[in-house]
Length: 73
Image (cartoon, rainbow, N blue to C red; front, side, top):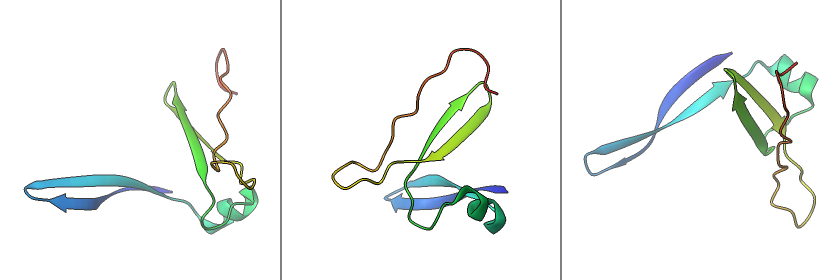
């Protein structure tokens, strides 16, 4: 896996960046994800948790992340 910073937009004298996380194809296949899936993420105590959002018709395509108490397991 690799974290990359790429230029998103250059406007006047300002440059805006976004971050891309590159995942190996085997991991994407194991998760059942496919190109174009909406993902939601949560950062807590130095851990990033990413999961696929809902894609039901009429929904925004995002499932709220349930908050937990205590350490992540």
